[in-house]
Length: 142
Figure (spheres, rainbow, N blue to C red):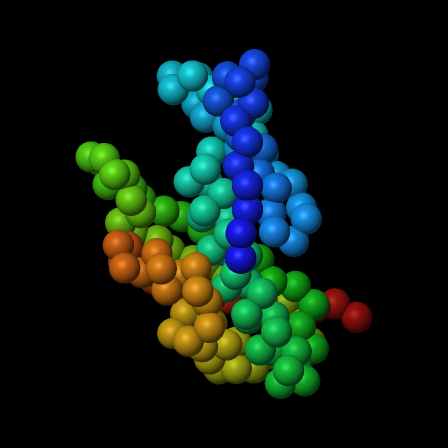
């Protein structure tokens, strides 16, 4: 896996990232750090990546189990250390999983499997942060 990060010098602290899979994303900093608030901060991008990684796992696990999942949202809340490096110290992931006749225990197990076995991003963050999860299961209409 690789990516290339390009600093856009005439845009303050904007960074354009070209991923190894050929996609582009941008990041920026807060005005007090020279940024212009034009894009997510790098740490926000890291947090979002962890949320995407674990949501991907949960949906895939449920689909492979032939469950009718129609939605998955992960609300991420993180706390950071006060001193540099300001690593994440606490992370809560609240899952809202929607589907037809989804057993709560199956959803809980999918979340646990992601957290304990599959999600590389949360495995890395778990080395500095206490990670907690919570969830709710909602029935989809129709």
